[in-house]
Length: 315
Length: 315
Image 1 (cartoon, chains in turn purple, yellow):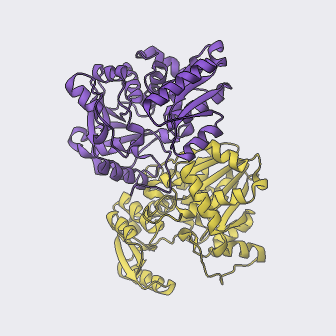
Image 2: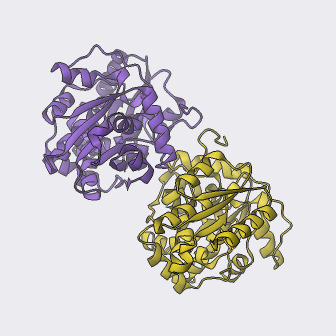
Image 3: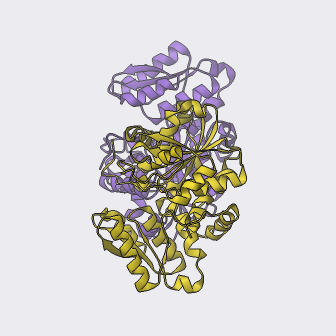
């Protein structure tokens, strides 16, 4: 399940999730076009079910299971958007979802996951403890692991947004997504190049978690980066196969500082009028940091999510 | 110009502004549907040009002028969304816009009006001073007055959003707009009943500026209310003809407290992921206050604007 999906599998995913996922709108802003010197088309996955693109991948994984697998449920470790998305996706099929969450996770996020009907399993806040707890739940229940990004079903699901965007904003010159674990960036790369191999692909990455940039530069996966960024959705190290996809599809990484990202987030709120989380704003920060790369171009920008603590805005 | 437009004039306005105004999306939220017990269709005028529905009316007024009138420009008094909208609308025709603003108006709003190319004229912060300054600009320049709501061209322009909404969300049972001066509520009432006389119309009004509610209850225009509400877009007293339209179209006013409105605003940000101004949230506050009136109904909700000071959120 951790190999890469092909274009056909992304088309299959689009058909599979169509009854459940939203076709999110593409919004524009004259002010942001003027500021960037480019023609920006924002794919608003903050308006996706669950408030993030993650529902696409989780939904594709859940509906890819055969009936016997489905009856045993699904499990993942994530206190963020993927955990919530898997809970919502499992509910569309009426199956059990188990979500392993570290002690200290944000209570509001856990409450949302429980409201969606999932069972929470708490563990110590380390990668080893998460994986051990996941394995234990798998043993006890037979539930299928749905990894947040190292899963071809998940990558295929995330890639479906590029198919939609191509219909909604035809003839794009470039496409920018954030990159964390790389489930989105890899799925979108395969989907976008399946439709138009000439499209130029970019990934925006926080400077404080720039393992994808380092890995592509060195030609080998760098796993020594200790993430230090405000972008909580982009702290994961890019997966092995995800990285392969970025390499094969010549995705260029643009790194941005947290200050640049927060300034871009504010612009998305004030000009595009969208509540987006800070990780989403990396794509606008990247464009504004390297405007000459995008001048006069028609650019697709993926806004990944809108689950924000309104009492703790970063400005 | 202060009579009421008829349905034909609203159809004409729609054709007139089509090259300049955005067809704003209609968004939904499963969480807000669950919370309200109704099926809510949010018409997102926060995504209109200039960040508010006001562009529709201003644009219709500007493009209704003959060439000789247009050459002399337009004038209004407003430090808020209407002033900005008139400046943007005048720019689409390449004509002069004069905006009379009271001393003490928010600097960011004035800067936006100037960026749109309008000339600011400052006056004392009283209604009399505003009107005197407006008259002076009219005398000096021959500019055409475009009143924020007591103007049939403006009402017709605002009404166009109801035509769009009816196409985007057919078969609505009810429609809720905020009411301040009544340009929006009256234009929408005429347009909506032109298409479907059976539609039930509601207007949400702040308790601290409930002159429309009082006026409809007493059968005569009440002008003694001294507005005291956080909803800066809804402090104007309802205009005479605007009130006539509310009466004729049996618009029912639901009053809401500022606390109810702020809570609803927060829900629109967190669940619908839209940056909307506080005045916009009155419509959701009204639904949540009287849920039995709307239970199981398919309801259109007009979100009027998204021009917010992100450094001064009301929670």
